[in-house]
Length: 227
Ligand SMILES: Nc1cc(-c2ccc3ccn(Cc4ccccn4)c3c2)[nH]n1
Image 1 (tube, rainbow, N blue to C red):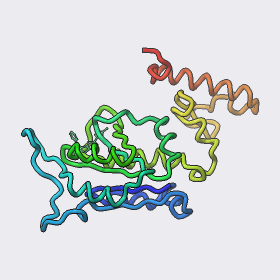
Image 2 (cartoon, rainbow, N blue to C red; image 1 turned 45 degrees about the vertical axis):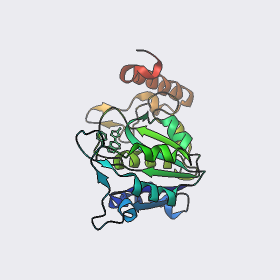
Image 3 (cartoon, rainbow, N blue to C red; image 1 turned 90 degrees about the vertical axis):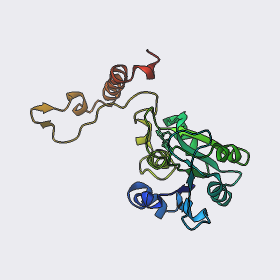
Image 4 (tube, helix red, strand yellow; image 1 turned 120 degrees about the vertical axis):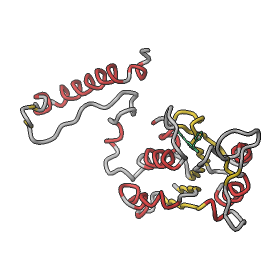
């Protein structure tokens, strides 16, 4: 998978060189390139924003630099991901969909967002998905892009050591994950649930499924279709 990120804060993505995705890059599973939007400006001040038509607070990102940047990184097979508070809610299902794509491009906006014509133009040359992390407002798209890149990257075949571990995570089967325990068998007076020490794998699987249902019902009834 090839990931291109366009941002005015390229240094923000330095962290992608470490951790799981860093190893995936070293192994050639994921290729990540970060592009500074200001490299596509031509004025002395490398201006990327301007005042909004129609008035209103804040500034809007100018279309010209974005047009030149996306002309360079977008291909017909790309999916352009535009983090936005007005986007569709990003979910594990969308992460799974995106993990099968060959090329992802992230347009990280700042200020009050990007001139709408950039998304409209990009939609004529590639698939575009405006994605929201949730119902709260960030200062820009970088944090959201990082979250999407991590959620998608870990689903790319070969990135996670034990692919089976992906199946039992929260939101994979539509349920939250069961609680996990490790040594010691008792800690501060709290024992590990005895079933987990029984060696009875069928009973353990049933107990874990019950725990998933109970936790999902308690914390996220919406996932069960309960209001
Ligand atoms: N789930 C999300 C995504 C975002 C997000 C994504 C991209 C941008 C680019 C600029 N801003 C700031 C901003 C503030 C006010 C109104 C519009 N945008 C962003 C915010 N916030 N919350």
